[in-house]
Length: 98
Image (cartoon, rainbow, N blue to C red):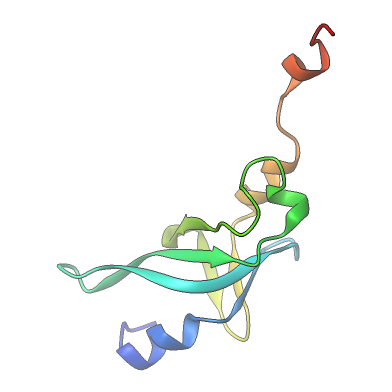
C-alpha cells in the first residue's frame, strides 16, 4: 500500500483472516496517524464468535494494530496472534468453588 486515499478506503468491508486461514472479522474502519500519513490500525466488526465470545460483548468490535497485517488482497491476512485467544490459561475458572 502506498497510502493513497483510494487504497485506504478499499480496505473497509474486507474480511480479515489469520495467516492460518481462520476468519477473524470484517474491517469497519481504519485508524490513521495523520502526522505520519499512515494506517496504524484496523477496526474490526462481525467478529469470529469462537475467538472473541468471552472477551468482547456482542455487537462490539476490536482494533488490531496494522503491524499485524501480512498481506492485503481480496482479503486481509494478519499474524496468527489472534488465534491464541482461543486457548487462554483460565485455570482459575475451573478451580472455582460453588
